[in-house]
Length: 185
Length: 356
Image 1 (cartoon, each protein chain N blue to C red):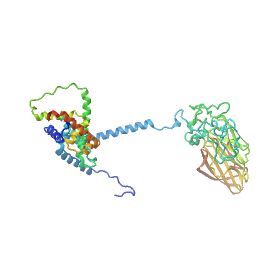
Image 2 (cartoon, rainbow over the protein chains, first blue to last red):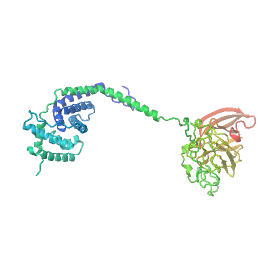
Image 3 (cartoon, each protein chain N blue to C red):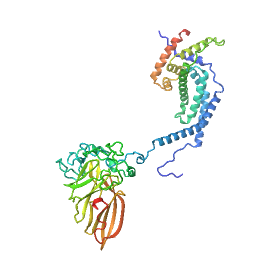
Image 4 (cartoon, each protein chain N blue to C red):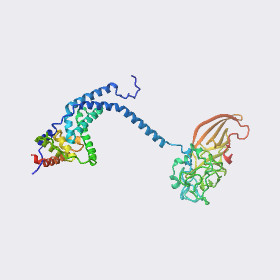
């Protein structure tokens, strides 16, 4: 190919290259699903309170990361992108639910089912209830640090705040949870 | 005593709490469906976005499309006079020739009226009066918009009875007297009309200066060098609706006459520049020189001839366009051979008002 002096052809992404990216994205999607889908749904369940909604959020996060696969700077951090997307979508959902709750009728009181009489269930319900009473940032910090086992730095990156803030949120969250769960210990 | 829960205990509680959550077995398929749906939507979404963007761009262009101001009713034409001609201490336009201390003289050094400060240097002016603040571009004249400036019925009224400064016409100008809003009455200006109001202004050359008693902005003046005979004419050389003053500045060295051209600016009359040498007319030393004003064409034509034997002269004509106070050659030259059996032929002043 003859190229005029001083000009270089603009590198265009060929169809083949595009196919390669798509194949990579598909493979990465499958791998990420196999390894992390369940834990991400559980993470979302701790941030939210509706497992059905949690699954929708996590599935949408997978779809978004797949669509942005060609633009990811570091594909080794795909899980981090995925986790951050889950947290961000959980935040958005909570905001929307907050608005909806203002106009919703009062819920019926919780009725204990016959199958849920075990102590484990009580404990689980208690910790989850206590968790949901925490302010959103404290809840995120506690869940990311002690369920997702992220470092303070990683949690700060996901939450979009400083490490010091994560420390403060975690400390306050632990104190608050300790008070709320004191009767169970 | 603190109630803080231990991290390990919290980890266990959290793991137990969500341990029974089982993902939907069709979750993977749902994700794959979502990926395919997004791919299908991407192209139409991009196309719709492109169409919307093009529509916004087209609408923006229509809304802010630059128009030709000269073609619009009431459009302001920028004349050579871009400010009220002469403020209290303004340029060389005043009710009394000797009045303002900041009076602007011509580009020549020469007697400055009534100030006693002597002649200024070339191009110098007095203190910068309000008039000098006007945009210099305004003095270039509305060459391109000249036809639009001719506003039938929009005749500007003359200034106040005292001929004081700063009273531009009120005809079609929406804000008479405001800077940059003086409009010519006709394009080209009528012979003898310096200030573009359609009326003949009186020009006199005496005591080393040329003075024009204008009917619109008052009197303006400029120094004249040489030995002026007193002859002068006002002709619209650059076809901007405002006249230029052509002054007979005396006899040429070898015979014939010399001339100078002055134009009206915000600072009053100014000697024009840009012409090579002196404007001359007449035949002397085997050479001939002529001058022609082409108001319709908005140009000044100089003629130079060399005797080519007998009564024949090889003549070259050069066109000059006045832009602001500077003449520039338009590059249009014509060469011919003419016979001058008697008289001066083309080597005189032609079509330049009363000088012809």
